[in-house]
Image 1 (tube, rainbow, N blue to C red):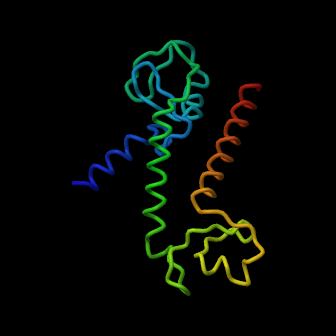
Image 2 (image 1 turned 90 degrees about the vertical axis):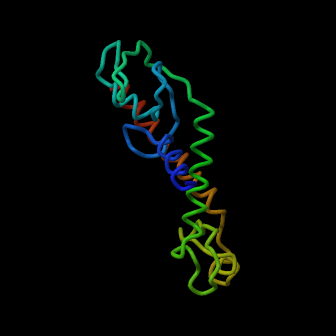
Length: 154
């Protein structure tokens, strides 16, 4: 029961357009939510009124504010997915049999605590895997925003 509920919850946090977790989620007048970039691309050449990609209800609005609550829920779900992924066998250090929870920024690999303290990685910059994943998502979001702005200029 719990896994079915968890899966249903995670599906509600996915964008209908890109089928991934919502990124910078916005909610339109009909109540459906999408990634801001996905919605802009979907409506790129459309004139007002535009239609919801899910229910086809017309909307007069093209500028949206981020749905902060939904953004926080997506962040929580991503964190839970990451923890589940990290607890899998493939994320166990074969040498020390510990979970790899550290990201080496120099070699760009995941490490367990003992490996990160080893001579090989001692002088390298490290961060928790969660911070590395969050930083990567922010970097990708900035790139998407920059590309969207360039498209708008053209």
